[in-house]
Length: 241
Image 1 (cartoon, helix red, strand yellow):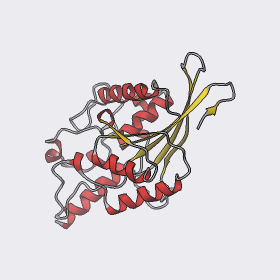
Image 2 (cartoon, one colour):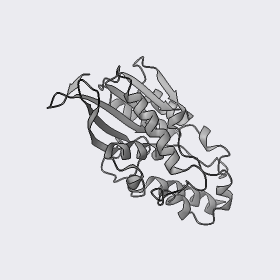
Image 3 (cartoon, one colour):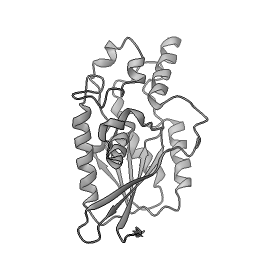
């Protein structure tokens, strides 16, 4: 779908999704050994199916997902029946904590608010990935996608942390707004950017919608932030153990 801004710029659009619901604890209440490999829960698949119905008339012409199974599965459900291949990009995988960090956690607040210091120089995600380095990786990959002119409407399915970086790119705020942005599971963000018709320089960016969950539009269903929800699940499992 070709879009033209008021001043004649070419307007392109990114529909940015977070993957659907997953569980980082198993049926026995233990934290999963490999958080990168978890699949969607039944509720996560239902979220993606509802999102697919809501966006059935959107003319996507390219689809990209992070290489993690939960993002690919979400993308395939949302785009089912479109005959549009889902490209897997490792550059959009989620920030990773130090594998030994969870064994040292004494306070679940460290999980619930683990993005709070992302804007500070040298900050790392729970002892693992550098926020600055992942931001560079994601922005570089995003701008590489944008440099490929053959698409006008992109579906990009990634993660809570990665989406915050893409939105920070759109705002021009980088990591300064990272902790202030929430991303519910299977949420939708809409980002437009305008290119000069001759030079293809990006002349403006606009966040048209952010953190829309079609199953809970006004956030009435859960007042907890996304990381708080994870911490709450871990607390419930630990209390039941």
